[in-house]
Image 1 (tube, chains in turn yellow, brown, blue, red):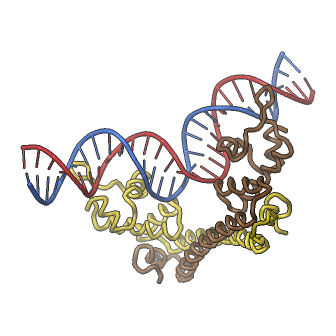
Image 2 (image 1 turned 135 degrees about the vertical axis):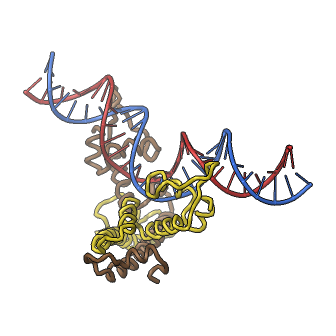
Length: 133
Length: 133
DNA sequence: ATGATCCTTGCCATGATGGGAAGGTCAAGG
DNA sequence: CCTTGACCTTCCCATCATGGCAAGGATCAT
């Protein structure tokens, strides 16, 4: 399997596959005599794992750790859970931040008449003072 | 006012003030004969506006537009509202995405016993198949 | 005058991703 | 055999918002 096929089989772009190899997230892949990367079924599994982890919002560093845990048959589930819980906490923090921004913005948008007149509470708020209370 | 004072007065870092000037988000600031940037009260207002907009999650491009609307006494509130609403929609999209990730992850974490045994549904899920459904 | 603290510019880094260029390889078909 | 098109290789650059560091100049207080 060439890199393009590995990409479509795994859902990871060609660019990113090479990148992951370059940063050591995946091991160096064997090459054909002409220098083409050659992927085996287990490489595809690896890439799929990475894609799912990435889709779950894990950072590259976290994925690196997840991979090493995955490949360690002896790992305690505790470590995995810890990592996942930390990431989850992080997600929830980000969600709350975005939510409070969205809430404030919703207020402002609701109070803006939005017609042709120049007066606008959104700009007033940005220019002005207290952040919507 | 020097740039350092402008930074603490506005809440925008020295680095970012210079950056905003470089990318044309704010006009070129007057300089002292020695080349130091010199800030007036209205420059601080501008920086504060930018900081608030940035805190509200607007992109630099959107802030640029907001600034031009702000400075145009004739702007229709409609345009501002449109911009803010678009950003709000964007925020809400991002929030939902994060929420669905968080929800899936919460399930997985909940089902992981998290003790010393190696079996772990989190890794199984990443490795395996259906995304927790 | 000397040291501390500020300012200047410029380059590099982040993290995840993509674009594009210049050049090599391979398979299919005339 | 040669061309063509699709693929591969590496390398460099860009994004976005932000920061760090370095070398050198300015200012200010002692």
